[in-house]
Image (cartoon, one colour):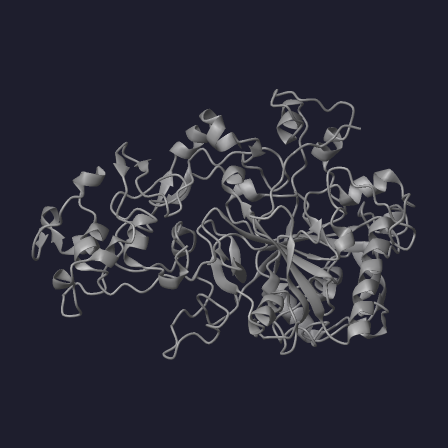
Length: 622
């Protein structure tokens, strides 16, 4: 067996810097008159209104991962000569994964089904103790699929209140060959108690974030896992090794709650300045803060409550909000962006692991599954090696998930959480401009090379020249709306050109270096890549082309020809992949991108320099 040496990077669970802007997902960004409701905890708060019409993508059965099979075989070899065996070598060998035939499930159909409750397992949701009306779990989606698909049926269902694990348990039969007979499809499809789920959260059109093609496996209870918008769910049979491991961990959680009578946990931190994680928070009593009343019932504890409870005890954490991103990724969740004096900064920041300490090595390139028949740690595995490879040879799973903690239900205390300060520049091939590199030269889309040195210089504006509310352009960032002789709109003096920094055209933000911020609001901790959040459909007005969209065909040539930047970056695979995990490319016609993006920078409103000049971060400056 050959070693799968594809490299991976933790991401998304607590991805980098948080955003404070909005998307088109009905989130009210109106600032309360008396400050933010949760300003004790949150850099930028929002009033949640969840997506009304959610879409889920459902697949059934085990995924036939031919690439993974080839990479584990004796036929696998380094065909592209890069020193490792990866899915690019599989492509050269002619090995491809089959496409994933997802069934699109609309939330309105699920809600209608749950309202009628034809299977009797719970009206509106199987767990009304967890979800508010209109919201439901992954298990509720399974109920809908079983009811709608004649190939699938429940053989038995045990309600949560009757289960020793306080979760809905069930056995399933699946007519995999669709011949109408449920008894001739193999043991894993006949009255099997080993069906569970994998999931993938939204990545939008960012094809380099495809991740595991069939999703990540979790130890979370299925009826506690919120079915959020743009979630891909695979219901499949697992091997016995996964079922007993999951149940063993559930028993540990329940025993911990029985022993302590409350959720008590610890938080470890690895901040890059220390070689090992240090225990930052110990013996913390976690209480519910009801940060997500749009989804959960009052009193439901989620992972985000760890950090809010720690803040209550005086620990140095701050949260921020991520909307739908410019890639179309539906996040709409809170994350941790500041820990013990260190704030996330653009392409680097805090990622999260939480669960039982013993599961740290459950998932990986060569899992051993050293457990006995009850899922407890043992010196020799009680399970076949091929079953272990099938279920556990994944980069993400268990306690390493792409799941935001404000929707990670924690009815039982996890043993620990760990926050790791990670750098994602190499993983994604991002240019390392972060708002702190003054004096660095940047090449703009027209070939102009300019030296940007005006960051936050509005602080030093001449008080006699400061604009006030009496100015006719007060609160409008684009001074060129009026001060532009070329457009025939000439009120007052023409804009100066920042020739000292290499520019050859006027830039509105340069005006603030003398005239102040013109009523711009204070920033919220971010230092760059404002377009990640503010380039969604709801964008600030009067900001020129800062958030404009356009087709960028040149990205195709860049990916194909500049391998060092877009194909591999310092050894990490960053080439786009399709949903089935095959190497892929962006469309030949190009992609829709912004004037400010990872592919280009606006000349008149360059991100981050125009943003940070006017929107001072105050106490959140790094």
